[in-house]
Length: 136
Image 1: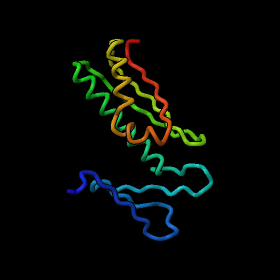
Image 2: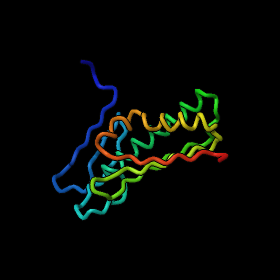
Image 3: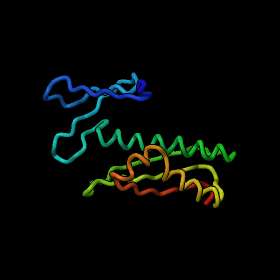
Image 4: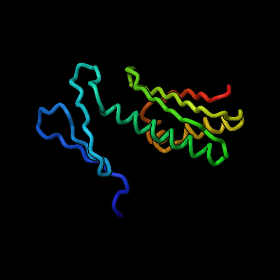
C-alpha cells in the first residue's frame, strides 16, 4: 500500500487548549474546540470543516458536470449548514447562476447526490439538498 494522496494531522498543543492545530496537505489552520455548551464557537470547528468538505466537493462537481455539457455555469455557490437536530443533519443549498435546461437539471441533481464526499457521508448523516438554477 502506498502513501496517502490526501492527509490531515490535528494536534492539541496542551490538554486544555481551546483550538486544535490542523494541517491539511501542508495547509495550516486552527480548529476551535467546542466548549460543551452546545453552541458552536466562532471560526472553523469540526462540524464546520465537515460542511466545508461537502460544499467544496459539491461546487467542484457541479462546475465539472456543467462544463462537460458545454453549459456556462456562471457562479456556483454551495452553502451547507449543520442543523442542530438529533441526529445532526446537513442542509445543502446549491445555486448555479447560469441557465440549466430541465433535462440537465435532473441529471445535475443526481450528480450532486453522488459526489465523492456525499457518498462518504450519506450513510452516516442525512443530507437535505435544494438546487436553484438561473433562468427559472
